[in-house]
Amino acid sequence: MTKDLLGRHHAVLPDWLALYYEEPLEITHGEGRHVWDADGNRYLDFFGGILTTMTAHALPEVTKAISEQAGRILHSSTLYLNRPMVELAERIAELSGIPDARVFFTTSGTEANDTALLLATTYRRSNTVLAMRNSYHGRSFSAVGITGNRGWSPTSLSPLQTLYVHGGVRTRGPFAHLDDEAFIAACVADLKDVLGHTRPPAALIAEPVQGVGGFTSGPDGLYAAFREVLAERGVLWIADEVQTGWGRTGDHFWGWQAHARSGPPDILTFAKGIGNGMSIGGVVARAEVMNCLDANSISTFGGTQITMAAGLANLAYLLEHDLQGNARRVGGLLRERLRGVAAQVPHVREVRGRGLMLGIELTRPGTDEADPAAASAVLEAARDGGLLIGKGGGHDTSALRVAPPLTLTVAEAEEGAAILESALRSL
Image (tube, rainbow, N blue to C red; front, side, top):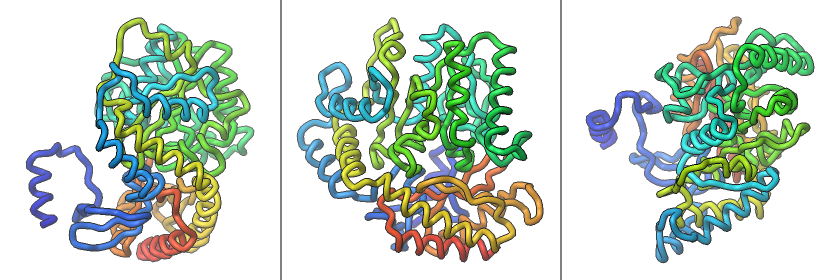
């Protein structure tokens, strides 16, 4: 049945639509932190549909909210008042840390970043954008144009002039040998140098932890130092929180809070986990930035009632059960367990990340050379052992991505770590 479905997939869908595994699997249902495939195999899910199933599969509170809303009305567009949309916007505006915040809902992180770029370039009257090397911001034409990761940028054509700065990867590149303070100073100097060679940019867009890039990040305080330089010139800071938001990093509710010395970002984008599988994205910005557009706009599907109901229930569950705290506690245990394994596996260069957003970078033993084949082999071996994980990376896809739902238990973390240990040792 799976082979038949795979053949039908290839017959009608694009060749560039990536599939995991040599024998792709069809996931049919899930519960908690587990999913099942069409052959009845059960897997511990450490990837959550690309960090999207944030709380749990089939979470009763979210399922109930969706069902009840579906029995009333699914959709009306933004042309009409929408109580669930207003209620979720109020919660997010308060949580964002941005003063006088306004919220605009989209259907994805790509669309959220696209909107943020529209706002920034309109507000600043500039089409120049600063972005980070190794970054990923989505699949639209403008988002691809600012993505600093060759593997996910299929064209060099863009409506924007994009300039890339250092800092998103702590342990590679020309500043990797420096301590954190010197690393930040070198990145700030690089930023100033870039600014001296271009017309005034609209914004810097940055992921506090780079997602597709392999869960890499600069030292805490890097973007605060950047913001001091940018603020002097009126350049906006866009924090791409599509993967880092909602407490996943454990230490903070938003990734930008690890860089809070200079205040919150001007614009914040979010998506993925807030809907727990429903299509919700959005942008938060202070009012003068959000309101700078001088033409009409609507959203047909952004903020639709059924997705807002899911978001409200999911956010309430997350806050009431302190899932940020759980990510910090269980994620810390999982990280140290994986570091203990890594010390005994020559292919592992680094275990990094925070909370339940952990990366395992693989290289050819004794070198810093990326090893995509090893990453693929571990992905397959983990699946054989009953564990689903992701992968990513910069120049080559050689980092394993571990990002379970935030309700992960200590026992499940230990089970997943044991499967990963076996998969890594199989190299």
